[in-house]
Image (cartoon, rainbow, N blue to C red):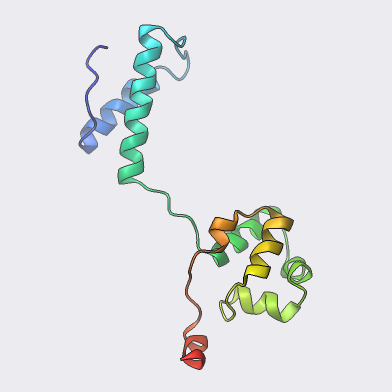
Length: 132
């Protein structure tokens, strides 16, 4: 494969992006030398991006808020799922921790991945002091 090399620097990354961009309008056939080159470049770029530009999953509250924003949902819809307006408000304002029951209900209703909802996250300071 002509001049494929590891991506170790930002300059190497920019070179690889420029090389693979050529294939976007006319993607090569799989199994051909050009198709293999495309696959190798894509794999190298993905590995570099995973290492240098990782995508961090949002905390549970951010994930819930993002879902609500994208779906055009209101806090009242969250309250219906959780069974209480105050519980929904406290959760969104980080004054109440998410429980496993809430995780189950939100995953079932909105398909937010459970692994996102069970991540640890920070509560408001006033709530932390009450529990200490």
